[in-house]
Amino acid sequence: MAAEKRECMIIGASPIGGGRAFREFDLENYYIICADAGFETAQKAGIKPDLVVGDFDSAKTPPPKDVKCMTLPVEKDVTDTMFAAMKGLSKGYRDFVLLGCLGGPRFDHTLASLEVLRFLRDHGGRGYLGDEHTKVFMISDEKLTITGMKGATVSVFPYGCLSANVSYTGLQYPLSREDLSIGGLSMGVSNAITADRAVIRVHRGTALVVVYTA
Figure 1 (cartoon, rainbow, N blue to C red):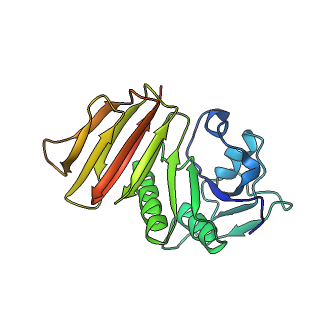
Figure 2: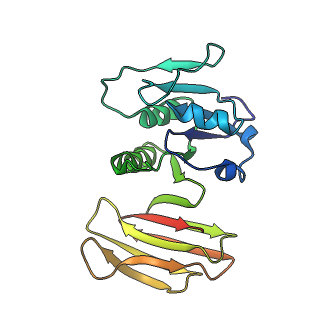
């Protein structure tokens, strides 16, 4: 792993608007992998990836020959995004940002990207999905600290389990070791960050934390 590349950024094919989603990142710190037509998103943002992977079924044109590329078969068991995550892990990266992976009109692709987050977590990594307005985290038996996002909307959902036991501080509606359940009436939807530092802790189970800014 190159010394200056401390984290891995995966850019997917889903639309993420203009360059706003990239502005918070110092791209020099990231090993950047584009998944399929994510290369077109990178081009529009003026970003040169370290690697492009995909079967290129969603790309208008394949990457030029001067871009390092791995062509995958169309018929395979994993998505291009999952393959990119596997590649990043194999290179030693453990911190991931996945942009353009929220699916857009393809809700099935969003669900597949959640499975990428699970895969990273189960293999010693961590990451989140993001676009220009939304960040999605998956946490298990740990805490998530959110800073500098006062006023953002936060929703928390159990994931892959019947319930998750959670605590919140720094939110409009705090909780202390309360259960959020699948199909239950205790729903963690549309809370709001009211402090400069908010903490969401999962004591038991796994939860998705969705942070939305207008």
